[in-house]
Length: 640
Image 1 (tube, rainbow, N blue to C red):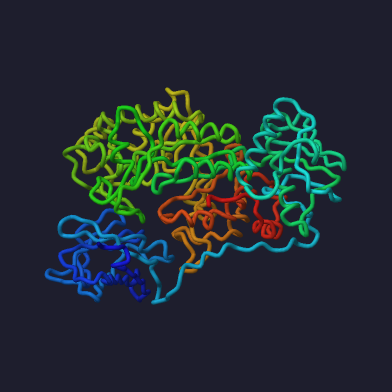
Image 2 (image 1 turned 90 degrees about the horizontal axis):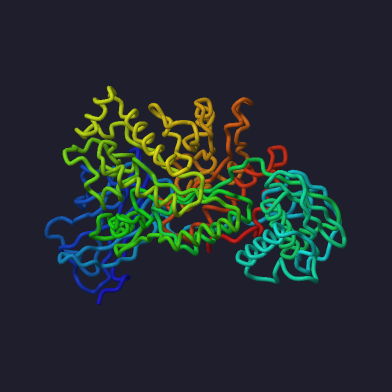
């Protein structure tokens, strides 16, 4: 019987004078018997260039970063023995180990699969394990108030110290305050599982909750020796006020030499932006429902109120759509021999998940309790390889392949000239609107190749019918048709910035996310669009934090250290007359380099806290030294 340890695959990337360097793969046979008539399958983010000669192997299959290599005819991998493959042409030079080898297995002559051990790619024949130490906390800067709140409040003047032993309890408050208190108490209990509760019954720190004329999400806190008084207009303000009190109390207990619970003073607080969000790519990797519930809790603890859920992409589809079982059975899963091969580090065994109505109800119920809006995204017309693999009749049967996008996917764009495309999308958006109460539905619109549809006679006929020869116009035509579907469901349309290309989608009742660069936001606002800023150079959490090879992530947008994320000042360079178009900001965590979910906390924190402070705290109230001191504390647990 073969065990996983019987075969081991090592890899090394060597920089050279050539642009992309050399990748070497070495397979070692420890099984005790020779191996012949086999193939090696592996996944990575960087790709071997098709059509290039490999040393020691032939590339016989490739989809995205999924490769199948065959040894020379007659080759026998003896025991003990090794097989080495050298590739001197990659699509780009990897800068971090997560961009190279992710997973691998063997395919035998009879079609059987043999698991193997694959280790992270080294660089320059370095050895050792990835260095994933989290940044440590630091002592408070001189003169800093000894209270721990992230994001930091608009105004704070406090002094003195109360005993932090007792829990917060609601001594006085109407129904809105009681609801908010219970929600904050449940949140703290889920996130901070050790130690005595922060919120409890009579006998600790008394809280008086009183309604006041304040912004909807704003709150005020008056500290006194016998009680704290929380002022807010309604549930949202009360909730954020109780979260702040919970953070202060938790830090005062956890690090009493650094932090206190104030005896006197006042906090006045309200958010800088209405839109404070995070995108999570659940299409490329698998997140269980309980993990998504955990993410919602983390967002709420940091006063974020939008959860952008990226539900479809080339590598996977995540919703059960009535009438289209193919999406559930085929697009929702990938693996060896399936319509979608193993990709991005997934194993040869079936890998995927499809969220049922019950799963989504769990998420939306939790989000409602935490005052978070889940914004669902179905990414179209590009990023649709999984959809087209499961429903091939959506393709023009006469189309000649004319495009491969940046990730080298074959024909991954829905065709605007195929009637069945709109039938599918109507069913999809009907279900999305039914499942998610969000006023917005995001429709993607990004990374469509400029030559998409040129090989489709049906698409060319549609352009000719409308007197247009520009595929950007065809993209706009498609997205405007989708926008009408969304309007018909009583929802507004969200999309990525490319949805402004061609004639663009209608700027009314829509918003666009500026992601390619910060300056894109102003350009979109000038065209009349409401804008959410999520520039990759500051807010893409899948970017590595340093240039170190062993730092996980990518760096096509540069490295994004916490300091860069924190000091980015959204909207500061916008003309005054356009600032009303800036809805807010969001961080994005894409899944290409998150094949190991144990990397989640390393990639997300403390940068999510940094973005949250820019989303909430006025520019003048930000302080990098204070932030560096606070980010090492347990402001909220992560996914682990």
